[in-house]
Length: 174
Image 1 (cartoon, rainbow, N blue to C red):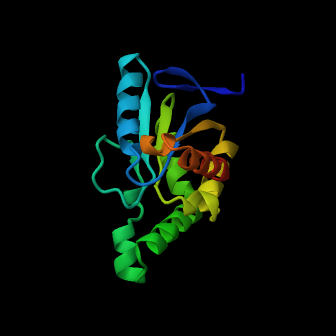
Image 2 (cartoon, rainbow, N blue to C red; image 1 turned 90 degrees about the horizontal axis):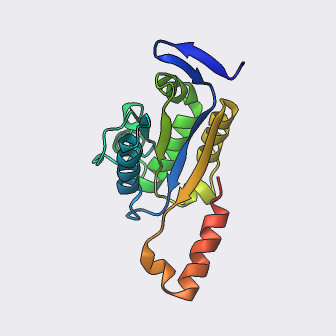
């Protein structure tokens, strides 16, 4: 029984489960996270929504962990003099280098189902390794995560756009 540990509320499995919610900006990632958390709470699950988007400063949900407590794109843009995309890449590299901060925050939530609200810049999943490395670290820590890749519905109504969206989803596989 090495995969269970005692805590004040009983016994909890050390295997943790959740979803990585990715997709382009404006595709409804935060709305999905909020709605999924409400649904799971309604059926009696303990849920923690984790905001991993350091550029999102208007959350529609209460984040159990918010990467903006560690670093924000606005601060990076002001102090490192990078633009929005470069600032976001910098933030993800900073999170990767400070992964212990994230794991310590997640360890405070035993028995929860995790929903990770991720940044919307596709380059973070297709051309850069920081997000992938963060997820690999979580996998090493016994997180079992699936990826939910959201897209705007109008991309599914045109065959060419639909194929493009499918290819993007395959390229961004986490």
